[in-house]
Image (cartoon, rainbow, N blue to C red):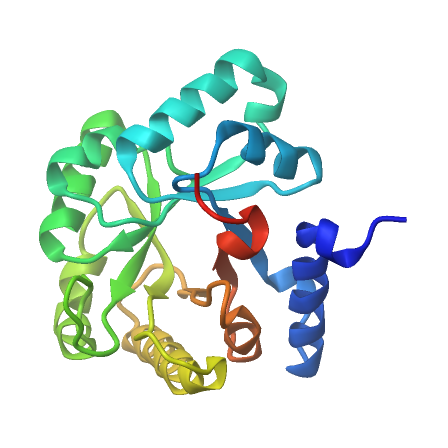
Length: 237
């Protein structure tokens, strides 16, 4: 018999399901993203074979190399996987991500949104995305402050070629998972504010929040995407 510790995907899926049920939510409303940055191609294949279909990458070149290799060596599987771009995206890399990512989680400025919009119109496609929010001042983290988000919503919503799905955030580092709860609640309240403006063609429904150490708290507070790396893959290679 396989022990839970040797089947991390099953273990994490069980924990997500339990957290959703505690919050009175449908577990199917939460999608698990395996954060595969710095992880080997073989580990991605192993998790994909076990049933994981969503993978998140932070660096454009690393991601596109993995994506290309998968399409070459496992074309049938490649059509089943959804790639999420979750890292900081520079405007000069936008063209490489547009149309290749199922969802861009990290649109953190109007400048980047305008670049993606112009490219999307040029290529006649629609790019799904999330707006990244900086919930507390921290060095080396990007994102829109809540105030800037509120001020910029109308400008974001006016850009063609973009499909806004919701918000993403990386809460400040905390020692205990429970300490992240207020930040998850803040992101949910900001999502509600976005929808109350009526600026967006469709309601924003997605919250990308929660990682290996706090994803259960995030699910309890409304996460629709949780981004889990080392708890799934083990240490980065």
